[in-house]
Length: 412
Image 1 (spheres, rainbow, N blue to C red):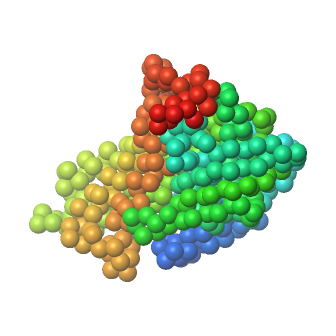
Image 2 (image 1 turned 135 degrees about the vertical axis):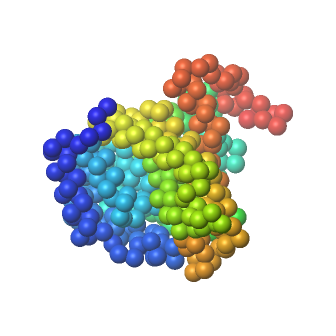
Image 3 (image 1 turned 180 degrees about the horizontal axis):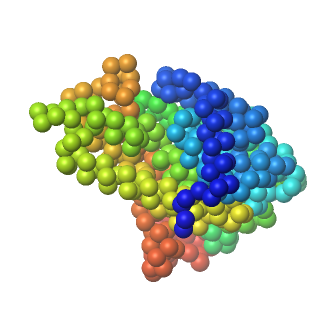
């Protein structure tokens, strides 16, 4: 694969850099550190949309620009240097729901939901995981029962990022418990203002409350909000989850935030021990070199996957590689940065700490990135089975009707 720009690509990159130099928002890091993440990301998305730089590889009729895959990659490379990263609230829409709708949505659903999604006028969340169905998503128990032209939904979801601040949600439910668990699922989109939907934020170890429990009680969803055929929810969910792992891996790990390789490099340059700047320490340089190589590999994996996505292909299991690497790497870099800063590394007050306390706050938030979008263990299974072709785990319940799967000594 040739990573050098062609003359046309080099011209486009120069155009992107020139526009970003004039229009990238000022002070966005400080605003985000002060808790204005949503405001900053929505404002920047709208600036891009209005200027014709949002969702470059999406078709024009859906709010994009219809540009080539490589131009979308070039934009992302240059934007990441000077502008706000996508917050989780935008990733669910732009990185997951949008690509899923383009594959499985009706034309009316695409026309209705994609343009406002591209401009961040509508914020999306994900109603997937449940107390009894997280890593094993197909074990979910939220029921949807047909009632005329509507579906009545009852159940509970958990770990739903930003649900308390979102406008719409993607929802997977069980519509037929008499067939094997992967075959009885149906996928919907739902307005979060629908009566019967109750998000309850969950307090995290960092003190923040990004995640939610969401209770659904007699929620009525019109059949027009169903995505694909009844019973095809697992296939729709797999399209979305492949995009989710790409988005999470590209963004550095959900809820990880804060620490970057560039920031850690600057920290090592700025700090000294008895022998001089830490950047001259061989052990420090080896750590930085190892993490740089890993980040470069992730960027190249993501570039390939983004190209496939822009061609209309569904991202493959390779997107799990970036997701698996980035979560632990964020955690390890945060811990190492705290060690480099010695006793100052544990200061959590942004006004007093090095690099506005990015290291302790990232260390507290990083474990979420190793769970969101699939745990490390699930990612390793996917890579082993679907990338390397190794034998799969034995799944004794795979072909059993869902209502015959034992649970707690009783049938489901």
